[in-house]
Image 1 (cartoon, helix red, strand yellow):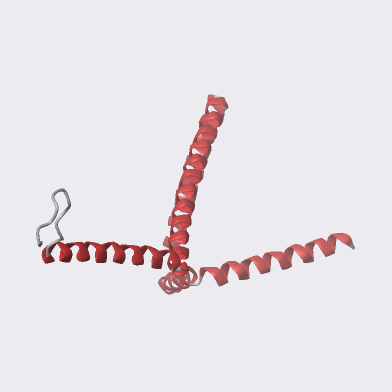
Image 2 (image 1 turned 30 degrees about the vertical axis):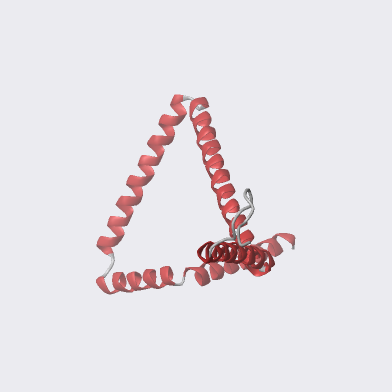
Length: 155
């Protein structure tokens, strides 16, 4: 009477039941994690923002490379189409300008007293440290001069 009919499966052992329960728990845990990830809008927004940021950086790099390539190509075209005598004259003029500027700089440095050189060095250091306000002041001064000049010519 306790015999089971042949062909039917026997009842699972306690060990098999434990394994099934553990497997079901793992699947349930994965399902809960997937659902919570879908419900986490903040995390999704961060992921999307990071993805868009990366795409923008890639696009910027691509555009920058293309612009550099086009600028190099344009420079090459200008160089190829400029006659050699003009290139030679430009190179000669640039060399003369550099030499003249170097000579003037050495002459000025030789004839400038030490205290004045020290103050000029200090002023240059301060100008480098405060570049933005200095540029703004210079621009304002130039605008003022241009306005005054244009008013004089109108009268």
